[in-house]
Each structure stands twice: as C-alpha cells, then as structure tokens.
Length: 399
Image (cartoon, rainbow, N blue to C red):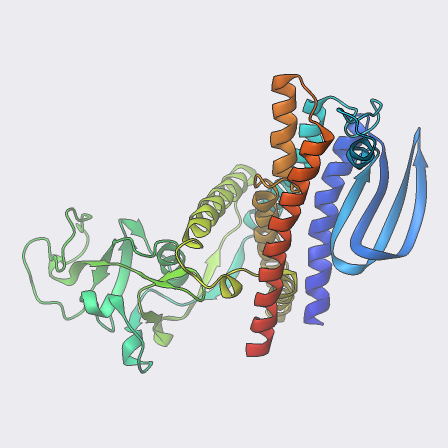
C-alpha cells in the first residue's frame, strides 16, 4: 500500500506539471496532440475535441513520468532528413509559433509545480499542526556507536550540552540543527551551547572560540559556550555531519498554531526560499566526491519515501496525515520545479534558453543543431537516470 500511495502522489505531481504545458500551449494557440499520464504502452485513451483542437488523453503503462505532445514538436527530424535549413510549421505548431511563446510553454510546467508547492505550504500554514520533535540536548555519537567519528566532540562539545543556536540562528529543535549542518560540510559553524556544569572561562564563556559571539543577556555567562565545529562530509548522503544524536529524554510534542492568509503566504514563501537555497548548496556538494548512487534518489525510491510519509502521517490522525502528505508533495514539487529548469537540452530549461536565443538573434535554429543538442541532452539525462535507478536498486537491496 505504501508504494501505491507513493505512485499516486507522483502521478499527481506529473499530471500537474504537464497540465501547465497544456494550458500554456492552448493559450498560445499551439495544438496539443496527446496528453499522457505515465510512459510506454497506452492502456487507456480517449480523444476529446474542443474548438479546433483534438487531444488524445492517455493513461500509459509505466507509472513514472508523462508527456504533453504538441503539434510540430518532431518537425525538426523531418526537416533534418529533407536537408532543410529551417524547421517548418504553422502558427498552431510548436516550432511554428513565436519563440517567446515557446518560452512561456516551456516555463509553464515548472511554474505549475512552484504554484502547487506554494498552495500546499499555505494550506499547512493555515491549518497548523502538532508534531513530536527531539529537542536540542545532544549526545556525542562516538560514545554511542563504536568507531564513529564526532567532530563536535573533538571540538569540545559534550553529551548533555544543549545547542541554542548555530552561527547566531536559533535552534528550535533537533531537525533545525540537522538541516543547518547537512548543507555545510567543510564549513566552520559556531554553536551556541548551554552546559549545566560549565566552568567559568571569562565574561564571554568562550571555548574553541569564534571571532564574535552572540549576546547572552538572559543566560548565566558561565553556562554559555561558543564552540566552532567543522562538519565532515558524509559521502553516502552528500551531507554534513558533526557526530551528534538527539537525547531521547528531550522528545516533546510541539504545537504549531494556524496562521492567517498573509502569515501562511509568508510561511510558504520562506519554506520555498529555504528549499531552493538548500538544493543549490546540495548540488554543489555532489561534486565533492560523494557516492552519487547513494545521494541521488530515483523515482522508485521517491515513491517509496512519499508513500511512507503518507502512511506514517495518517497513522497519527487525519490532520497529521494531510499535513505530512502536503509537506512531502511540496518538496518533491519544488524539486521538479528546479530540476526541469536546469539548462539541459531535453529539459524545459534547455528549451527556454534556445527559444530566448532565437528570439534575440531573430534567426531560427537549424534542424542539424537542434538534433545534435537533443542527442547530447538525452545522453546527459540518460546517464542521470541510470545513476538514479542504480541507486534505487542498491537502496532496496540494502533494505
């Protein structure tokens, strides 16, 4: 059942993405020949005619992916075979329409993903939620797991310490610490730590000191320490680790009250900004020698994680189930928004760049150039797909 929930969730995201292309194409006067949820052999279809456009709506066998096929998308192949210097097409075909309209059509899919994520996060902000969270009291991992390194322990942190902030940013719970640390491997982080039995070390209470320290007016300075830790890179997960685990005694129930319309909109915008920033940092980390097959998730693993999020969420009640499902869907939708805008030829981002170049130069792209670029894009995307699928297989084998 977990996998079914995951596939349904991914299906919703893919349908919404392709619907963005469909709506934009029709508004720009381009005919849509076929719209499919899923890939491969068609198991069900129905042709619907609206005005001068007939679209074959399909449900295909492979439940990952989908497509919105527009009139004239493959005209470059025919032009290439016949040796034409330009791709022919009428105003109702993809390559026949103005390049700026092609930009709108290509951007609409990722934009719909962004809109969906914003709506989902706004619903979460409006409804509020309750969750169990580990606090910020920590245990040194090398005292629990044999052979494990702990940069935090080496820097002077101790079991029982309570982390109050990272680089001056408040730590509300353990997930805040994990999120902040994971995106900063190899970069020094100044932790503000409260220690119950700290010895007085001066008016600032600094050990392994930072150049500057947050103020601690409301705390006993003898109990406040500022410890600089450099997270190690975990090549399995492509994230930073400092070798700490949460104290089981610090787990507590937290209630996040619902916000108004404007508060929820701000919450959604902030979450999106955080995710986009974290994603680009993570992409940079991938080039630091991590194991790609472990760090990159394919569709099977994503569907499984989504299904698990749905199942675990609803086990805590309907409201918690809806919140956890919307939260995970918003993250995947944002990932689709970013990944589809990457400047790779066969993705929306590549199409946007080529269309903009054509609009600026006022010259149509040659079929031969488009063919070579699309082949290069297919090789890149195909290689990424192989890595992702290999990672999925290793993930399920280890499980």
